[in-house]
Image 1 (cartoon, rainbow, N blue to C red):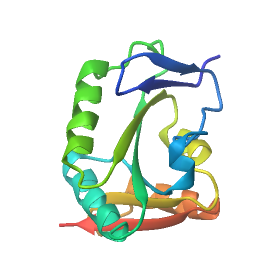
Image 2 (cartoon, rainbow, N blue to C red; image 1 turned 90 degrees about the vertical axis):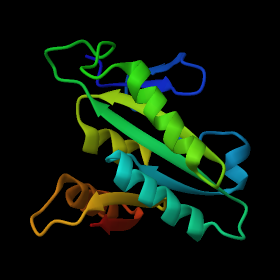
Image 3 (spheres, rainbow, N blue to C red; image 1 turned 45 degrees about the vertical axis):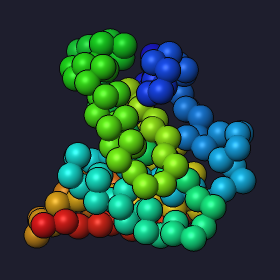
Length: 160
């Protein structure tokens, strides 16, 4: 049974079927650069996370990898998500375009957001997650804990 599908945001070609998916920073020119992964949560929180990641990369030869995991319910086939792929791609490209640092976007269609992000973001990765400030537990805080337990270095940026 399929559990994940990666969709290339820049050329709109299907890149991956099956599990586990390749890392957003596969064998290419970005392997030689410092890469900060930013997890898409919401437009506003992700924009703030991109700004924080860009500030961390100031003066460094760095790159931002914007990672979005779109959950598809089991009632639907993976290639038919409830939110239009064109809309999701356009949203990611707009956020990446606003970034002051070189940014690539990766969109994963999956059944479990936290599982796919934990498999894509390898131990030792530097990850920035934007979240709205809440006094109750949020899925972003749970994701940050899961990624930290997997060995990632996580910055949880809470915005008002």
